[in-house]
Length: 74
Image 1 (cartoon, helix red, strand yellow):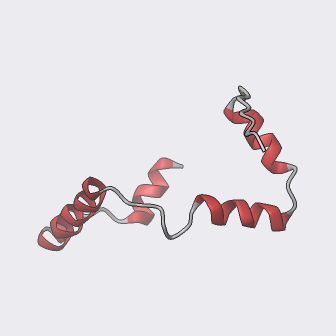
Image 2 (cartoon, rainbow, N blue to C red):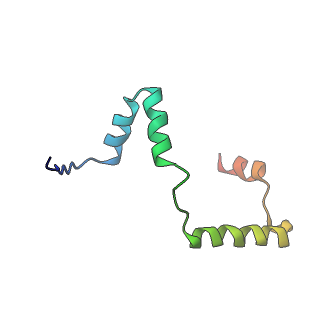
């Protein structure tokens, strides 16, 4: 059997509209495919998170209160 290659140009909004048409079960399956445990996290991202955790632990006074910050954003 020969393979067929299809290249369809769609924008983000068209993808969103297509996803909205899925059943809840199909949406869950899509979510699992997109966010499976095998998704690699680049070492640079891991290091960034570890650096931020270290900074937060070493300088707790530099942390902002989420309720206060989110109130200013609203």
